[in-house]
Length: 74
Image (cartoon, rainbow, N blue to C red):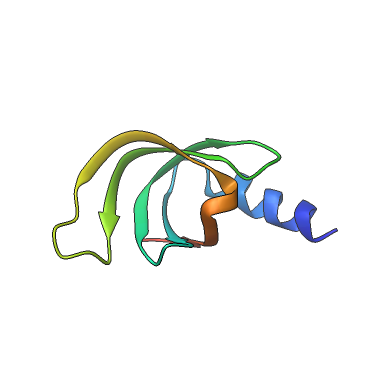
């Protein structure tokens, strides 16, 4: 049931900017282009956040098992 709500929330976020918190303590923000049932996320214009020298990452896939939190970002 929780997974259904999480996937619905991701659907509403398609094409919008999101912020991810990762297990290692870092974060990534970018535009959500897609996802799958395992919460693997496809982000465009992605960039590292919460680091001094954050890099621009471009188009990336983030494995769902590395994600702690997904939040809308304006």
